[in-house]
Length: 71
View (tube, rainbow, N blue to C red):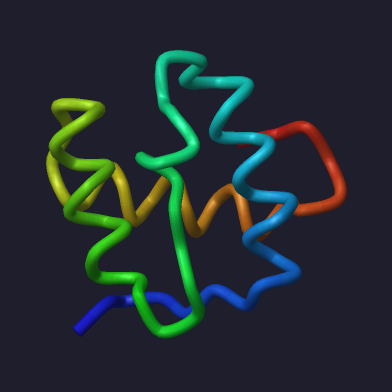
């Protein structure tokens, strides 16, 4: 089970931040529906060549600062 929960509203902002930081990610890589956090984490681990802890940390940090450009 995923360590975080992302709402559709939060995802819209977080997706923009991820696209800015990792411009090689496609819309398909960033496809997400509420409740599908685990699939998103696995997909990002594969595309970014990072471990699970890094991906979860990055997503949580991005959500913590949703109203800023910080990721």
